[in-house]
Image (cartoon, rainbow, N blue to C red):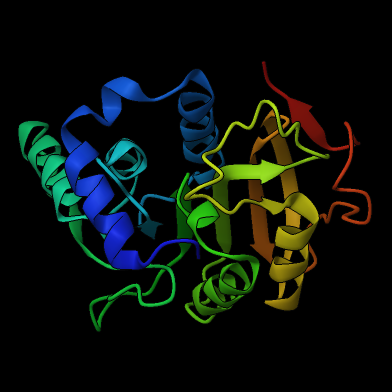
Length: 225
């Protein structure tokens, strides 16, 4: 991680009020894909890590019985809570938490984990640890939208901020999910540096060939403009 968790939290606290208005088309496309692929059943519990101002958690709340939003920024959590109150959503809650310490209630049995544009702040080893921690919750599905590399990024046109962000290749993320007992069942490329991965707990479901995930378009993979 290029900056401490406290530094990231402070940065997002300052940004919270303007965060929604400043998001890119790629971010919004990734949100839509994460919500689409999460697809929770009405009686399931969703954990949304790096919930920010609540884009995913609030979209999923009407579809399922419980959504737990976690973030490191008090400012972002305040924005998310205010939206939930305005929309009259009682089955979604927001609290401090992070990938490796999700801070869940004792009665929470997580069925689906979602995250969007958050994990790229971690270095690759920390990403592996984060995915391993999430896998210990035994969700049936993890849906990760993030800045990630499908090929070699153009250093002259980075989608991310090199001074604070540390994106991984799709292959690194795929390996981390495999090591945690999950298999990629969908890969969506929004941009050559932005994608959404769907990982299902291994139980005989269809599995994508992950050997070639670091370059170009491939079978089972949709590209979005």
